[in-house]
Amino acid sequence: MGFTVGRAREKQIVTLRRFLPTITVLLAACAVGPQYSRPALDVPEVFRDETGARGTASLADLSWWDIYRDPTLRELLKTAVEQNRDIKIAAARVTEARAQAAIARVAQFPQANANFDAQRGRVFQGGDYVTGALFTADGQVSFELDLWGRLASLSDAARANLLATEYARDGVTSSLVGDVATAYFDLIAFDQQLRVTQRTVGVRQRFLDLTQSKLRNGAAAGIDVNRADASLAAAEATAAELRRQIAQTENRLRILLGENPAPITRPDVDLEALPAPPDVPPGLPSSLLERRPDLRLAEASLAGATANVRAAKAALYPTISLTGSFGWESLELTKLFTGPTKVWSLGLDVLQPLINAQRNRHQVEAAQAHAEQVLLQYQNAVAQAFREVSDALVARQRYDEQLRAQQQQVNALQEASARVLRRYEVGYSSYFEVIDAQSSLYTAQLLLVQARRNSLVTVVQLYKALGGGWDRAAAQHAATLANRTVHRIPRSA
Image (cartoon, rainbow, N blue to C red):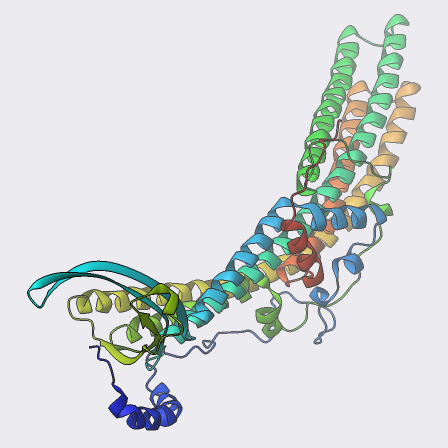
């Protein structure tokens, strides 16, 4: 309903205005709907397959430049965090969500508008038509009394969405750091496997030459030469496949850097020459809820869904607004602000949903169902996080065991292959023994490189699973870059 208060009730209005703040505070207690609190979670006391010393310190507490000590990898990570397009997209989403949160916050304050109106018309007065003009200039103020907490709940939901986008950006950074480190270790592993293959090609070429010499001297058969030639061709085919994998991994890494596909400058080293990561325990399982960006995102989404339930329930109740205006009226434009005629009004609007009441009740049901979904998603994300940490811990332990066994196998096969080749040169070993020894050694050497790669990548996976790899300062720098228009010249291969 709406009404205008005249001058005769001015004293009553002044009295009412004195008590409005008190009335508003008292009625604010009428806010409806659930308040958010973190749900009870089944958090284990220790991680499964955790070994070594336990404590509150965690591998995730270290910055990525303390985890990855290789200078080339550090430079690649720095470039990726600054230039990666996915990080810039996530940073732009944070800026958008911050603006939306500000819009929702402003909606809780009084809204003011200025209005100017000019009218001209004819009215029948005193038996004749009178033509005249009316000019009006006024300011209008409206304020919704958020008695049931609808606007506050919408603002809470917008702030929760802002937090969720910030945690999403942190999650993108964490994943990017892990992806760059994994791609770098893959690249070094492929390089090392290519060097092993090239040495094998040389060995098999010499063995082919030796077999051809024996054939000329009548000490070998033609089929022996054919098999030696086939063994050499197989190694050369593997070398070609490794070169393909190297080129594609370089391209993958360049995209992570926010650049066009091109070769990657890197040291010509083996995996065992890279700096070893620090040996730090995983920390307490309960701290995972605070460290992992995806869990913080899921919880922020749950808080936002809870706020939307409150807003939907508040929409079932009347909307109460105060409105007021003050201005001037005049029959002449030149006397609009100097004439004696001033107009003002104070109004109270109460809007009770009637036809839309059923729709609003369905909105409450939908909001509650969505909140239940988000709660289950949060609980599932927590359980999945504990699983990822446990998987990484057991993988680190078993890959280290595999690496030691693989190294022992390579050492034994190197000695056996050398002995068989010496015996073959003097006629004490057969061609098949040499081929078998060389093939076994080559396969074991490739598997040893893969085992070293797996051992390093497991640290990457554990670091990410524990919630490491994101840096808020770097994320804020990426947000600054996201607000710029950057034109890059494609790099040539």
